[in-house]
Each structure stands twice: as C-alpha cells, then as structure tokens.
Amino acid sequence: MTKLTYQFEQKRIDNMQWSHGAKLFGITALASDEKGRVRKSPLFYLETVSINNYEDDVYFVNNTDDTLSFVAPFRLCRNIDEARAKLNDVNVENVEKVKLYSDDMDRLYADVLPKQGVRIGSIHIIYDSDALMQWFISVPYKGVDTHYGIWRFNIVEKGGIGGSYPLLWEDFSKPSHVVSSECVTERDEMPIEPSLYEERCWVLEQFIEQYDVADAIFILAINDVLYRYCVGWSAPYNESDIQAKDIARKLKEQKPKDAEAVKAIVQAVYDFWFDKGFAKNISMQACAEILSLYQAQITNKKSV
Image 1 (spheres, helix red, strand yellow):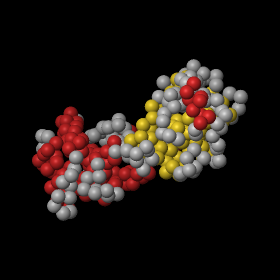
Image 2: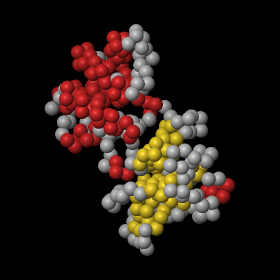
Image 3: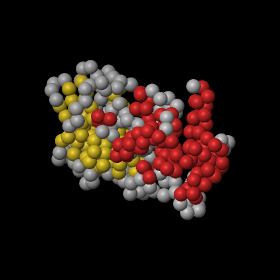
Image 4: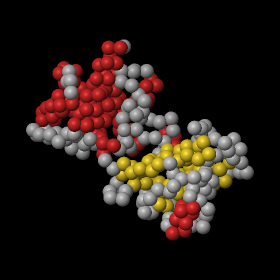
C-alpha cells in the first residue's frame, strides 16, 4: 500500500450537495450501486475537487443532518497495544505512542457540520495512477439499532478515487466498492475517542509526576480498561485515576495468577472507595485485559 506523503493542509467546504446524476467511481463498483445511487443518498461519501490539471483533493462529506463531533481519517486505537506502544519503554517515542497520538493527528477534524466536506488527502493523477491508495476513516454516528456508535471505513482503490464515492447508504447498507464498513456500538470495543486525548495526556502527566515513567504508563493502561468497560460507573476518564493507582499497587502486592484473582482486587478497591458491591458487575473480559497488562509489565521489567 502507498501511504500519502503530501504535506497536509486542513480545508473545509460548506454546502456540498450529493449529485444523484453523478457516475460512481471505483474499480470495484457494481451495476447495482449505479442503480442504487438514483434511488437513495449516502450518509457519508468521498468527493474529489480539482486543484489543477494533475492534482485532486479528496474530501469526506457529512451528508447527514447532524454535526459530527469528529472525523478521523486514520486508525483510532482502543489501547496502547493497538497504538504499538510498550509497557516499561520510557523513551520519548514510545511515550508519544502511549498518548495514542497518530502521525496523522493533523488530519483530525472536530465539529463537522451537515453537508460539510473536509479534506482528507490528495491524489496526483500521474504519480499515483498505479498505486493502491488506502484510507481509514472513523466517525461517530448512530447505527441501525443504536443511537450511537463509531463507524469505521476502509477504502482501497488503485490510483485513488475520482468523482462521487459513497461510503454508506442512508439505509445503512454498504456500497460494494467499500472494502469494509462497520459500526462499533459496544463500549469495550470502541476506540478511545480523540476528544479524550487531551484529558488523557493530562492524566499521564500527573502519573509521571508521582511515579516513574514505566509505572505511569502501566497505571494509564489500567485506567483505559476501567474507562472502556465503565467499571463501577460511567465516570469521566480523570475520575477513575485513584482506583487505577490502587489496582496497580495491589496487582504488584498480590501477584494474581488468573482473571478471577484480578476481579477480586478490582472489587476490593471499589468497595473501599465506594459502597460494597459497586464493581460487582465488572466483566471477566476487563479482568483478563488487566491481567494481561500485569503479566506484560512484570515480564518486561525482568527483561530490562
């Protein structure tokens, strides 16, 4: 795959209109999609805007009647593992990965208005003509049976795209040319949203002031799990930091061997800070993730 390497500049275009008569573009577009575009409109689509005879800008267009809190034309992560960060690695590059900041953060848009297009890249008709171009796009929007989810799109086309390129039809069906589109609705499966990054960085800085960098990363990773699984309550990210610290300490003291032992630790911490049974419904999957973090932490420390 060829990764776009052009210097990026954010741009927005208001009042973009879906052209029902426009021919769909894409090497994998089917005749059924051509018929479909006459009958229905997309919720989201890509559109190219000519810069000159050789270059086109690619825009993601919000064709809904709702403002999107963000549009992220890059992969979002659930945890530091998906960000390819490591526990116990204290170098600056790894700490930046821990923050979940992508190399493409300059492409992140907030508050994308209805019928507004945001520039996500460019295509050169000569240099990119033989290249496989790929875009990952994440946006928050409702699903078929839910009021909120994170839609994730994966688009791959040789030479990029041209013209109108629907990503999701208004009935939530996927056009055939889109490699994948999925709506993640379960909280534990959702990525940590970009709107939380600043707060999360502040929490990490507080941990680093109190502990060494390796322990700070470990506690932050535990806090990620508590937040994603809504352990105890649906608290703001920075209000479960005390519990994350206590859980990290007890993990080191008690050296749990399985998820059941981790569950007992988490419940004991929440029983201390809140009413007894406050975290009684914590999922075993969350406990398994915390156990995995603990095992990775002690393994990495032994190898240092």
